[in-house]
Image (cartoon, rainbow, N blue to C red; front, top):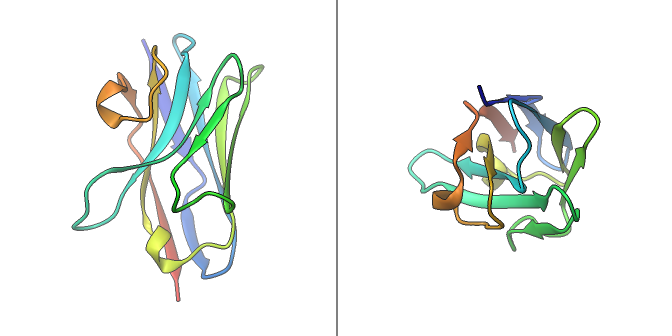
Length: 120
């Protein structure tokens, strides 16, 4: 059974940093990614990583501030978030797909999400 479990969310002040993690079990994937959804907004792509080649993809809104990485041995993906702003506040979801994509509709497996709140 495939499971994706996020952890590491919380409350941080603007300008601060936070790291969220996603532990995967059940199988390996071609691509894993992070998406987020803020109240009243659509789910949006944040970042993704190719599990084999380590190629990374970022939304323009987080490029230069967020870093996605993974640890093969632990089958865990991370999102290091720096220079956070209140606009980054959202529920962050871990997701996985057998394709290479940044479109949420292409992702087959999803975690339950972890809340990230950035205070001004």
